[in-house]
Length: 268
Image (tube, rainbow, N blue to C red; front, top):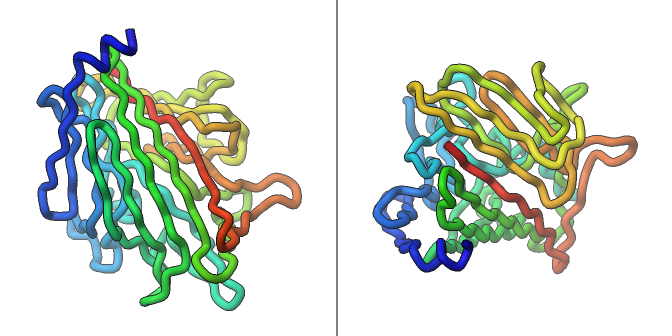
């Protein structure tokens, strides 16, 4: 079946030359990667952001994601960021862009694959080299999988990552912000999640809802079980490195890249 799907799929990329490159399969939009700074919905200038995926669509053409929602201008489709980024001498916030920002440096896109090289910058100083490897699989009936691999490497000094410092929380990592919808249901590998949840281990978590009356589900599966931040207002995020006992941070070392792997599944 996989070989047949690959044979039938014709992928192509279109660079819109406004910081967005769009992937199509057989003439239908699959997703857009925002490699350059974007600003929407009258968001403040300091909310300008790049290096994220929006939109991403189900095989039926429904995008369950939101970008620059007015209640959280710093949420962007499928994105990855950490509230605490520390060097030996300073502390920054990549979640809210305090003193640090993503910058897209270059990308290559071919067939259904994209490789983007980005940097985390404090002023003109590059602190972290980030490489995104994105692979879109052919639509399989009513579902499609995206593989996302993030490689992070400290450039010259150790960089420590932590999630939110708020009590009982530790969000930070690969996250999805969902668009306005009805009939919202959050589910994880352990079953339905009726209430908002923090720091519970799951293999995967998803949100299913109706968007203008059309169903869509987006699931994030981590390579290994991780803690999560799950919100019925429209947020599903992997909390990494999370918070368990003495473990509340991870330190990137120069010359020792870290790889984080996820599968994102979109279905009708």
